[in-house]
Length: 60
Image (spheres, helix red, strand yellow):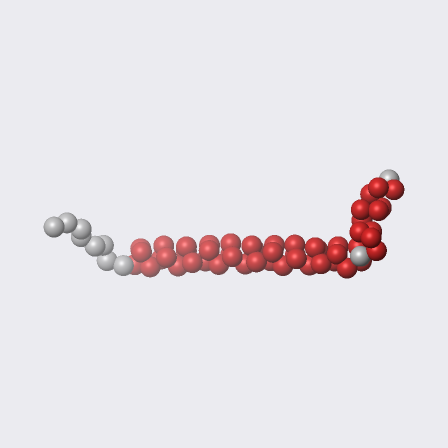
């Protein structure tokens, strides 16, 4: 148990290190959620545009 407390204290800097890790993790999760929402929204917009656009004829 003492080893865990020593690790968490990080030589007296644990009060600075752990909040920094927590804030970094929160920001990265927020970026991930934002990116996934944007991706879904843009996919829906693309599907709408493709459905409304006239079909192209390919060939030579």
